[in-house]
Length: 84
Length: 277
Image (tube, rainbow over all chains, first blue to last red):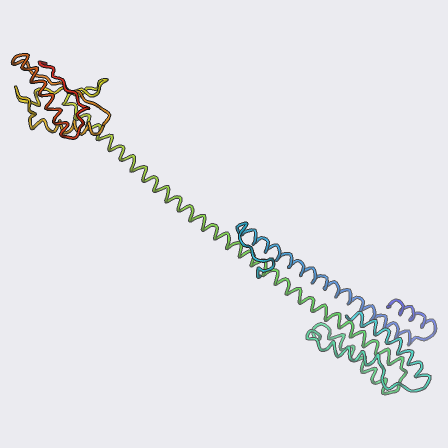
């Protein structure tokens, strides 16, 4: 989108419309900034997903460890029933 | 999501531009310019977020400036292309602000999540430590119990050993006490030779002084119930041989009677009168 705008701005320059070219260039600049902000945000969202998954895994491992520590055959709490 | 808003905005602009061309052809501005109002709403929405002033102040200020510029151009009845350009900028600044704000919320969640993970780890470690401590306590108690049991067993063994030593000493003493009865161990049992020391001359009654020796012999017999005893009576050479034989038999019988009176079975005692020694 930013690239198309930039091409349009270049054409406007060639067409002798410098003010329109400046507007298109400014729009292209903000399009690019937005694309970069989206990328940054998506990276952070992925980090959140990863962290939440790691916590879930950790809790499952701890729950399994706690069950294993109890005497085998003893009544074990229902899965996910161990509060953390 | 802001991304989809962006595309909607893009299409909106395309439509608005078509309208603008038509409007320009007819002369004058429309009463309401949709991309401008959409941008105004987007800026207002973004400003509502509690993190807006912290992470998107610059973008939102720029968006406000663009909206004011658009309004001023509208008031001046300027070219709609210029108004829509400012609306486009305002919308883009609002979109960028949305992304920054969303990212900041995600950053907060990560901080909370890391705190949560640390708390979970700490709890797990605490629980492990508590379990280990409990197990150690149980093991310690078990060890203490075993130690106490070992002590009791040792004391019992010691007591048994002491008892055995006492019994052995008593037996030793008993055997030694029988020495003055001239005890001899033979195939048939213990053979005792009762001398005149136990009797007065010519008498077959035990002297009171002989009783302790008889008591000790009886005790020995009770202690060893599988032993038998043979009593050989003797006399000195005074008097006739026949008399002495009878006397020696009566002396042996006196000893037997005394032993039986002290609880020794008569079947275990054999009496022999040997006559003159």
